[in-house]
Image (cartoon, rainbow, N blue to C red; front, side, top):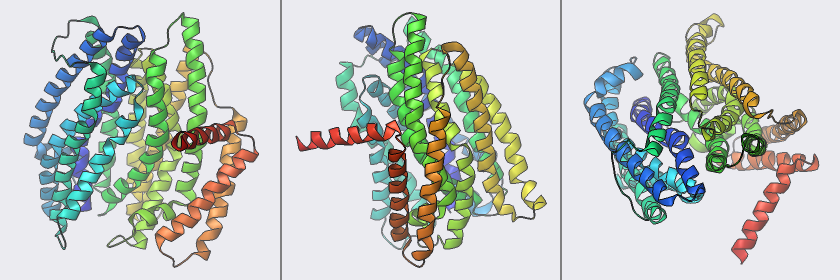
Length: 488
C-alpha cells in the first residue's frame, strides 16, 4: 500500500514541480523583483496578474488530461506494478491531481511574497497542507483498512492544497493592491517571464524525469523498494529545503534587484553568493555525515513503529546513506543556479541539468539492477545504488555550474580550510554520538534520537565555535536578536 501511495504521489507532483516553485522562482521573480526595485509597482502588478491567469489556464488543462490519462501515466512511472497495487495507485493519482494544480497557484503566491521579502508566510503555509492530511487520517477513525487510509490521506492532501493557497492569498492581494487577470502575452515583461519559463521548465522537467526513472527502476526491485526510497528521500530533501532552497530563495530576489554597471553587479553577486555558500555548507556538511553515521537513529525515531520494523530502518538507512554522496553538491548547486537566474540566464543551468540527468539514468541503471548481483548483494540494495549514483551526477552538475559562472562574474568558492574544519568537526561529533548508541540499546527510538542527535549537534556547534568559524557568531547574533525581539 505504501508502494502504491508513494508512486501515485509522484505523478501529480510532477505537475507541481514543473510549474511550481522552482520554475516560477527562476522565471517570474527576476522580472517582478526588478520592476519593484525600479519603483514600477503598477507594471509589477500587471505581470503578476498575467502570470496567474496563464498558470491557472495551463494547470487546469493538465489536471484534466492527467486524470483522464492516469493508467497510461502509471505505465510509465511504475511498470512493475500489477494487480491490487496498480489499481490502488490509479485511484490515488486521480485524487491527487486536482490538489497538485492548486499547489501550482500556491507557488505563484510564494513568488509574490518572496519578491516583497515576505519569506515566513510562504514557507510556513505548507504546514496547513500537512495538518490537513493528519486531520483527515485522525478523523477516519480506527481500525481502517490500509487502502482506505491511503485514499483518505490523498483527499486530505487536496483539502490541504486549497488551505495552503487560502492562508497566503490575503497578504498577496494586499501587496499587489489589486489582481488584474489577463492572458495578454504581448507586453515585454510578460514575454520575458515566458521566455525564461521555457528553458527552466525543460530543465525542471528533465530533473523530474530523472526522479521518475528512479521510481521506475525501483519498481523492478523487490517489493518495498519504492516505499523505502520515498522514506529516505523525505529525509534527504529536508536539508536541501531548509538550507539549500531557503538560502537560494532568499537570495534570488536580492540578486535580481542588483543595479549598476556589469562590474558592480558581478562584484555584488560574488559577495552574496560566497556568503550564501558558507551558510549552506555550515549546516549541510553535518547533515551529510549524520545520514551516513547516524541515519538509523533518524529513521528509527521517525518511522519505526507499527509495521515498520528494525530491519526496515536498516534498509532505509542504507538508501539514505547513498543520498549523502551528493547532498552538499545539490544544495550548493541550487544557489549557483539562482545566480544564473538573477542574471536572466536560464539556458546554462538547463544544459547542465541535461548532463546530470543523462548520468543519473545511466549510472542509476548500472548501480540498481546489474551491480548488486555482481557484488553478491541482495537485489533490494539496488535502491541504495540509485541514490548514490544520483549524488555522483550531482557533483558533475555542480562543477559545471561553478566553473562557467566563475568565468562570467569572477572566482567564487568556499575556502578549503573552512570545508576541512566543517568535515573534520562533523566526523568527531558523529563519533561522540555513535559511542552513545550501544549505551542506549533497547530504549525507545525517540529517546535514542534525542540523546544521540543532541550530543552530535552540541559537539559540532562547540567544535566549530572553538575553531573560530564565523557562521557560529552569526547564528548567535540572530538568536540573540530573536530572543530580544520576543522579550520586547
